Length: 272
Image: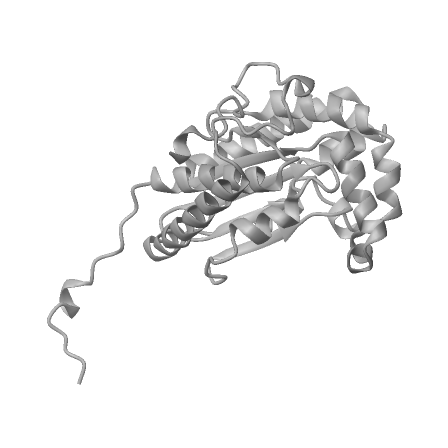
């Protein structure tokens, strides 16, 4: 059933994304209601716990999950709900904000390289190396030759990771401008959410159109067979979480992992 969620969400390599044609409130491939979606999510998160333990035990593959999106698209919420029950020993979250002075003194992929998953590990990028293309572009800090060069570097960087055994899944959480307004206002109205609000969120919101243009090109330039992008309808939080969980579970299942056998020298061992 999970394999049919999100028909049309994949950014097919070599095609145009055209975000305005993708419905942020849609539930493609899922005909159920919210309660049914939540039940299916619970089933998938249980399966994800099993597969993540197997990933850690087999210790052959690494998994990188990239979450991108506008402010309030739900990156934190997705991580919290999809990975609620996984063993923290084998899962790690890396967050990328404004580069520090030290990070700025290196190439733009340097700080990301420090956070890549090891074999047996799953790492979740809350924002990612794409920030160092999108934000400078929208703020007119770099010109087209620079961001095109960075896209080439990203494609080769991700190809190298994939060839070395890292599974890469990239999710653009597609939220509408109206839904973003509602969520930002909720942060102002609810005292328990004040800590989430930043004045910069309003400034970035004024650049909405520029960000959409930048995201479209980023998705088109860097969705590849080895590191595909998915545009996830994210106005409905329950479907957003359901889709992300279904893609990760499907990717892990395709690895056909097995628990390592007991070494022959220990097969006759007894616990005394």
